[in-house]
Image (cartoon, rainbow over all chains, first blue to last red; front, side, top):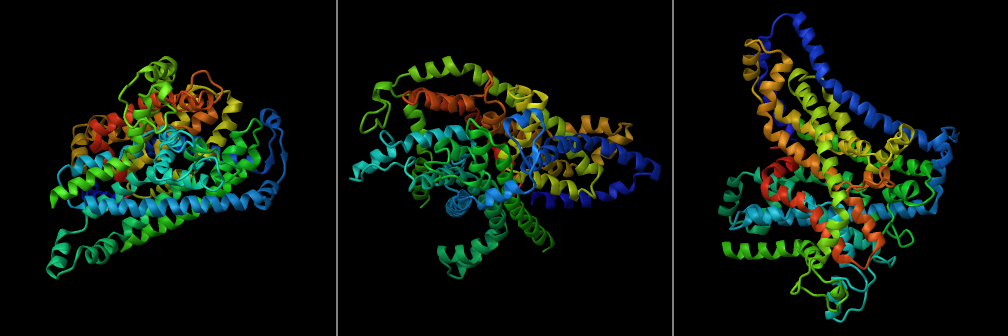
Length: 318
Length: 268
């Protein structure tokens, strides 16, 4: 992490701090520090901790829309969780989440890495082209999602027109259960390539060129150089990239919701979509099961996050 | 050899950016040609009727988005700048808990945050307000901003701040007159991202602001898709206009973007 490097800067800068005088003044310095930190602490409590608490509270009550306004819901304990976990749709959503997430991050990573290696050795226009690759990541999701929707449109989409030229009949990308999940996954991979490219490219910059020169002298070809030098040395960056990808992809709502609304017949409904739809997607908001699904999603993300922290520690200590 | 790579690079970029090209192409296509088979690959006969319709209908939404974006930048900076300073310089030790909280904060799915905010706003009467949306959108940027400021400010040499203190400046004065000016680049990076995320936000807008008259442009496009699916040139024209901030960032502020993307993730 960049932060470990700057921590080191802070540590080397510490001798100057030794000059700072008397303990009394240090205590007032501490209060000053807390004053500077106070807005963030208040912010985290009010805008993160409290919504999270509300979410847990929602999930253990039976919140009807009326109870929502009047504030007198019935306490139901873990019933919502039980109902969610025993719902057939849960397993389907879990499977869709797994497919969507794993296929997305695997291909984003593979394509991002291939591109990063391609751009590793600079060439004419390489900086400009690399910058152009950021475009999908910078566009508002609604823009990308609606563009993909139109491209994949059954009757007038460019994708089907292109396939028709090869004699392939009409495919209902977004409206048939067999292809809906595939379609949103492809769009999501497209969205994620830039992020992977940028991070992996930055990681490649830190591999000493001398290693490649030495390998070249030993007669290693490009393939061997990649598998023996690039890939192993990039491992820490790869791990972080994949984990961040996992955490981000688990919670994706917009792209799927805009393209298919999780349909047809739940074919592209992930856990996040399920939660969103229960709470906001229908005329009848059902916040309690939605909150329960959302909390399960947090647990999954949290497990991934713990893995992230652990990897970071390991890298930091090595 | 070098030219070969450039050629491949151009082809790859072209494939990658094809959807963007297609968006622009469709935005310039006449309504009558929209369902042509095969579709027109190039707007030989361009029309700006889509843009006229988009600007006619979405101008208020664009203004709302602009306002929300700027508001989000302000909230983010007010919360994150002092915190970054405190974490980097005033409390260099014992900040592990805050780091952990900020990491966890970034993992919470937006839909969960949206439900939490909804439950709170419905009581406070803040549903469908621009202020409520600004606050919600700022949660997309604050953890990132604090971590970025902390990393940046930790690199400011202590000697510079010690010099200010010898000259009689208090902590606040040092922060304002020394640390802030030196942090200009990181402030720009954070502001750009906070603006872009707020501008692009769909989930908070579609949950906390869905029955409002003042909607941001993302919601405007979404409603557009729902209402008149025949006028894809207008939809795509709105999409092109909504992409302007991203294009602006790419052309004028590219180095700040790269700084932001890598800040959180790469160890050098």
